[in-house]
Length: 177
Ligand code: NI
Image (tube, rainbow, N blue to C red; front, side, top):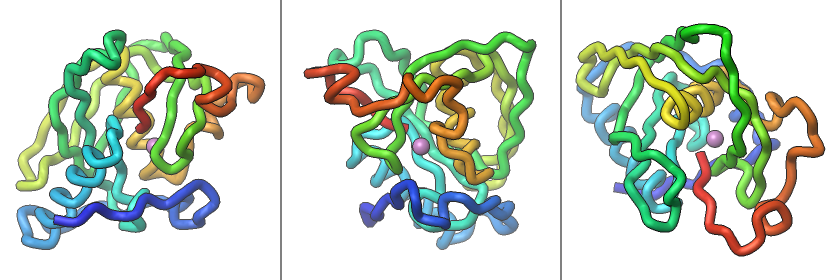
């Protein structure tokens, strides 16, 4: 397994519309997923999208473990989501602070749908569907935005709510998506 280099905002590869995965359960796809999970965990991220390591495919991974350092963050099971479709459940949105492994050390206040249904496939090509809310819904929206070339600053309503972690939240350890 390999810890991949995460592309940073400004790299044009983060702005592409990712292509659908066509072949499931192949050695290449398994290897890619393993490297993404290892990279996400090594960087202490909540999620990682394939475009962030320069791979132009509709594939995201996310996972949030229970961690006493982040008591206000709800855990999310390890999920591999391929060719995802997101459907908001209702109009309600909520704002919360987000970070991103492609924009290290920064934070922005981003509106997201409060509830949604998402579906897609795992690495074996098995279909999956979930209804989620809150932080889980936020992480899925953040990661799937990466597949459409959207980075969270593009969604900030008021750019005064965008800045450096060290200035916004001094002394606090924060996770990034
Ligand atoms: Ni991100």
